[in-house]
Image (cartoon, rainbow, N blue to C red; front, side, top):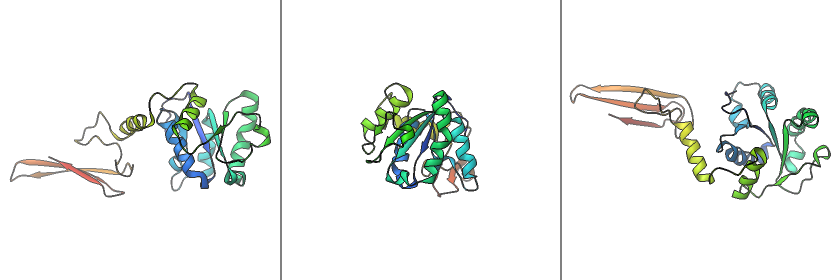
Length: 206
């Protein structure tokens, strides 16, 4: 699991795989505001123990967003994740449970008294509601600006030793980058290239 930059807020996204698009949108809303997010698509890699990774996310989270829908109601994973944090949430108030409802699915009885967010499909209003529910403040900027700022933070290394300051591939996000150089003795020039081993993206300069 990656090192947390800001431990103050760490949000676990509990959802059914059929609601992946909504989960991804909510994760991007939060990440763009520098809020740490546990979203299975970002945290679980090939070869990882799914249960171990989920346990780590649940252990660290300060906020537990449960995405409720007809799909989630039938999901054993979502039920287990909710049950695993309920005792701590009831006794100490940590993590904070934040239900986000996609359709007309009612809240589970044990959390029926908790204020929920009615998701409207990834609108700007959704973003404001979710970020304010987690942080107690409004978003710092509009979503496009926040995403571009976050993208640059994640893609570029200001202290890069190579001519290309990429931390990851700007095309697919892989960190499998290969830097190389070639000398053209005839023209007394040096060419530098960077290639992504995963998707084949490349760039060169001299």
